[in-house]
Length: 123
Image (cartoon, rainbow, N blue to C red; front, side, top):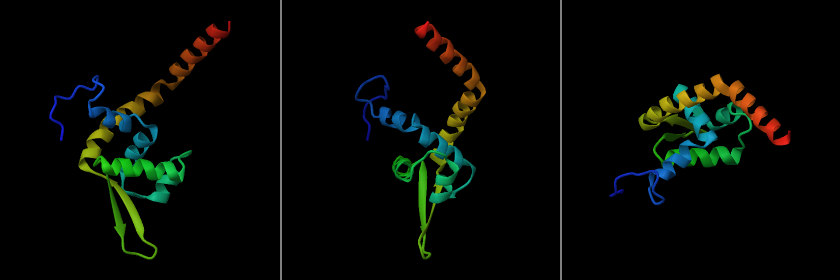
């Protein structure tokens, strides 16, 4: 348990672990999907293009460990596993959706700035 007052700017603050998790693009995308509905592993893998099986597994385990995602195994043959967002994860997903929305709305401006910057360096 944490006994100090959280200060994310302090090197030893445990909140930095949480920031690492939520700053990960795969975590952001998975929480967004799971906020819509529970999903099975392969459905998540198909939906998030570019996400490898290994990275999906690692990200889901981290999200589960942090209490943001719940894994449920059903006794079928083969075993069916479903992932769902937890109430804590839903509170985070609401905020992350604002970031995703911002990125979608402003990508053209960011790309234009990148082009200007790159041209200034090469010019």
